[in-house]
Every structure is written in structure tokens, then in C-alpha cells.
Image 1 (cartoon, rainbow, N blue to C red):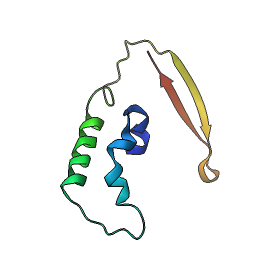
Image 2 (cartoon, rainbow, N blue to C red):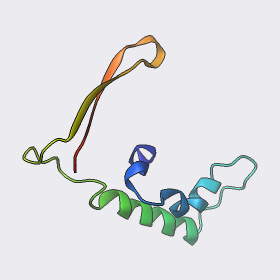
Image 3 (cartoon, rainbow, N blue to C red):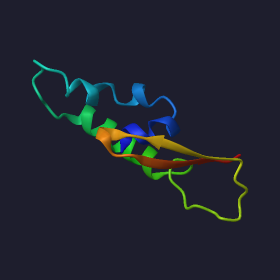
Length: 84
């Protein structure tokens, strides 16, 4: 989920430096106050506007397109939209 929302959170990569280090190989996994602080900050970014907000049908849609995606031989479609 965070990967998807990363396009809406400014400077996300700099906000999760210590959390990403936990995923590296040959690194001892240790959860300290630094990682916990980063985790709480990212949670706040994800849960706050404008990252997440209710869809308003009264706002004009600027761009609407249908994108075909084919993961593993199954054809699927994704509806993409953006607005001002």
C-alpha cells in the first residue's frame, strides 16, 4: 500500500531510510525508537489529507483513461483518473 501511495507523499524515501534498512540482507533486524518514530510519521502522512480523502463526485474529473494490464496471462483493466 505504501508503494502505491508514495506518489502522493512528498519525500517519502527520505522519511523511511531506517525502515528500508531493515529489509536489507545481512543486516541485524532491530526495532528501536528511530524506526518507531519513522513508522509513526509515515502512518500520519498516509492517514492525513491530501493523501487520503473521500471521493467527491461534485468535483470535475480532468483526465479519465482506461489502462490495460496483463499480469500473468489474465487481462485486467485499471481505471485511472486525476483532477485539479
